[in-house]
Image (cartoon, rainbow, N blue to C red):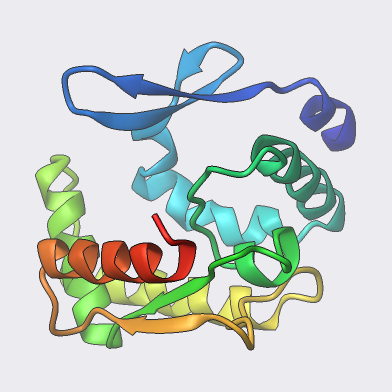
Length: 170
């Protein structure tokens, strides 16, 4: 049943002219906020442990990226989905920094949550994703590592842009 449902979904991306960010659509519905929600974060690792889910989602991600010219983020993009990608960046940050950033993001969304709850969720996700049988969280051997612990978003963007310019001859 899960397999049948997944085969019938259509994922697209569209540029929001107001925010200038791409948003995710599922069967024509904008799900950008939903996929970033705490409810999804609390369940995504559990669902992605199912091999049928991983296999079908990897297939869909590969279709989306087959013509190149796309930037993807995810815990197995560089190792499983696109192991031959021209450029892989493994972004990381200190656990406390990651938790604080996620806490602030959720608070901005109006979610009532404590920092300790965010830390618990993050710890559980990291544990599940690192130890799952199918597509575990691993750094690709050929990925460049960007530790964002002490960086602003602007500094992160500048670093990535410089690497893209250098590596991709843009």
